[in-house]
Image (tube, rainbow, N blue to C red):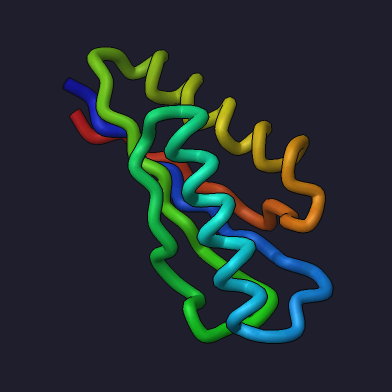
Length: 95
């Protein structure tokens, strides 16, 4: 069993309030869960208007599958959510 964890730091340009930010982040988290069948949560930068940190977790039986899934998720965010910019990402595999 392999647990893949990807922490992604996001910049949300033009966001003017925490309420607006939370709506964008909540929508993104729900969509990632539906599209990729992964667990997702906002894990840091909760009180910063234009930044967010989310964690995506996948449980699988192989390193390669975990890495590929997490990489696809980052690319999906970059290509399908233009209001959100991926600033940094960190992948960790736990065996």
